[in-house]
Amino acid sequence: MTKKQLAMVIDSGACIDCKACVISCKVANKVPGAFSRNWIKEQAPDFSGTARPSMHFQPGACMHCDTPTCVAACPTGATYKDLETGIVEIDKGLCIGCGNCIPACPYGARYRNPETCKADKCDYCPERRAAGLPPACVDTCPTKARVFGDINDPMSEAHQLLKSGKNPIVTVVNEVTDTKPNMYYLDKTAPGDWTEPAVVPASMTAMKQLTPLVKGIVGLSGLGVLAMLGRQLLVGDSHEQEENHHD
Amino acid sequence: MTRQFKRHDRSDIFMHWFNAACWIILLVTGVGLIGNPDLDPVGSWYPRTLRALVGGGANLLNIHLAVGFIWIFAFVGYLAINARGALFFLREIFMVSPARDMGWMIRKMVIMTLGPKVLRKLGMNPDLPAQGFYNMGQKAFAQASVVGGVIIAVTGIIMFLSDKVFTAQGTWIVSWSITLHFVAVGLVFAGLLVHIYMAAISPEERPGFKSMFTGSVPEDYARHHHGLWYDSVKSENASTGDETG
Figure 1: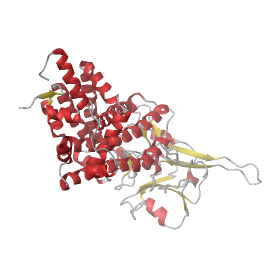
Figure 2: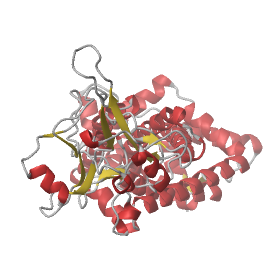
Figure 3: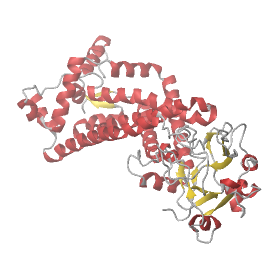
Figure 4: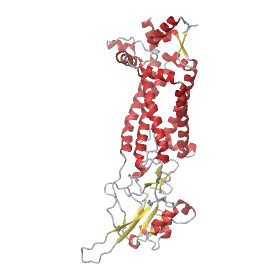
């Protein structure tokens, strides 16, 4: 359990698909080209029944999961779960842009920034938070569908929405890879079938599987050295014994 | 004073210790750059402590990169200046005579760990086959160092270039480089443990260790440990009339 868990509680029923959150995020975080750190998914209307067809929109972004598969795919810890804030962070100085984490997110929340050539995703606008402002997407939302705060702080609106018991709370999880996301939706949300199973690159899987083998070989070598050292200390110099044999 | 046989030039000795210093720093910093609970070779306390010590993972990466490039540039420069010596070295370490050298390797390993008596009990001749400029153990570690060193340097450069020239489509090359870099270092390190023991701790190779400072070994050491090389130097000197060795 983290001390703090910054998170979003979203009333997706209030979302009108205006995409102001996507635009403001791109501006605030200088997200290049066709890339985006956040999104609005839409549920296609159902015309088959007699009921009036309607659409449902679902705002989302990095869900700052409790068991993030992106972190497990990173060899250096350049991406990590910050235990102080609960945010899944990227250390841009340590990240070399190897790309392992990008297919490892079931939500497609990560992209490789073509300008920095490093992984990038939502980090809840640290500059804005430092200035006492909410993240850009939250601030700009005209229907206030996104509520941001520390869900472990009883005083926060996010906590109160989550714990009031007035609304059922749902998360969008992938059945194959449940990463325990920290993005909560009020009542119900749709669509729910758009996530992908986390894919860890074969190179990273190979590295993890080879680790015991590499450790074993180093260990065997170390044991060999210890055996030689033990013999040297207990029996003395084998060379001198051999010397007599030679001459 | 016993006659000395020259084994290493001053430049070789310098490069050996320069390489040793670089490898130690690169190993210490490199292991600290691995920060994943499924990989951490010595536990997650190590990367955490080391990163705290140098002011963060980014600084650690920069130190590792700087030393890595110093190592690569110095080595390339050394090889360019001393191409003849490099070719001699490569020929010596990759010329393996299977029967002679494997026989040496197996018997030596038994003698060093279990003792010569065990070898006799196994019905094997405890006399070691004569060796050339390098014995098979030195050859094996040198081969691992050369092949491993090239893999480590090339994969290191690829990782360095990852956020400079690689596009998102090419990152699989970077990712495999990380894996290869890690495995190659692990295997070379396994050999390095034996190399350090044999050279610096085992009393038997003491004259060889000293030659990494002085450049030469005494005659009886050359005769006993590198018989084929000893014979070739002797016959070469006899034919040129040079008896200084």
